[in-house]
Image (cartoon, protein in one colour):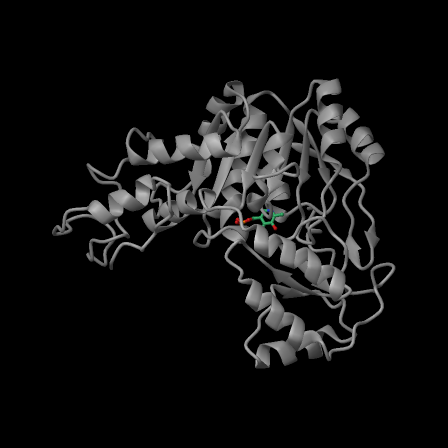
Length: 356
Ligand SMILES: Cc1ncc(COP(=O)(O)O)c(C=O)c1O
């Protein structure tokens, strides 16, 4: 198993470089495939994720700097473990209740359940067939009854909560703001990035940046949260982190912005009657028959992220090629668009409605 060929111009990739420079050796260590290569375990030279002092410490330091955090922790088990770590930190700070949007991801409800945090759901309505982000007044009302606030930003449909208002409300009440950014890691270059507003936040690096599946990062804005968050990370993260995943997280966070594809995505949305949102990485097309459109596209080798019964959703990243978007545009040219639904027809998602 050879190390992955990670390379980024002008960037030091601590983990990937260590993997490439490894001595060939006989493996009397895990994993059991015994093919020492990229998929190694924590060895004398490869550092230790729980108590990093070498390449992993250097990678986490760089990541924190890029994301504007006091401390960032690499996760190899998805944003889920980051959400659990954030809720753990909150509990360690003495919080016993949390205001959360009604359509939060199951990991949020599960973490609160496991840690005995009482949830105050913030109402969300469904419009255009999709769950809308909560309104400022509803956030204020729920936060008044809770010790902290957790928002999802952006959601799976590329919509954002009122981030600046949420920060003001949290500051006004002296309560922490947590953000589940499972779909927002690609935003760290700009104004809509969770890390500009949150005390604690998770980046689902594997979803919208070029990291391997399950690669994520959880971060604390201020040092006062970092220790508590670290305890949460150590409680819920695997003790056998995957080096290919960790190397890919460092690579992905350092990956350059791709303005060409961002602009092409916005132009595509305008040209093809897509649902409006503020996230270039999520394109929602209201086909008259999403199932027929999906079958048509897949038969031609084009796979969307999901079909929710109203829309096909196409998930982009900085690695999407403008030519691929053009191809999508050509293919959908002949497919009829549907009415944008005004409210949710029976049987159609909200995506995350697993409040226990
Ligand atoms: C909003 C949101 N939060 C958290 C998660 C969990 O992320 P992961 O699958 O990386 O654990 C997801 C996954 O889809 C999600 O959509």
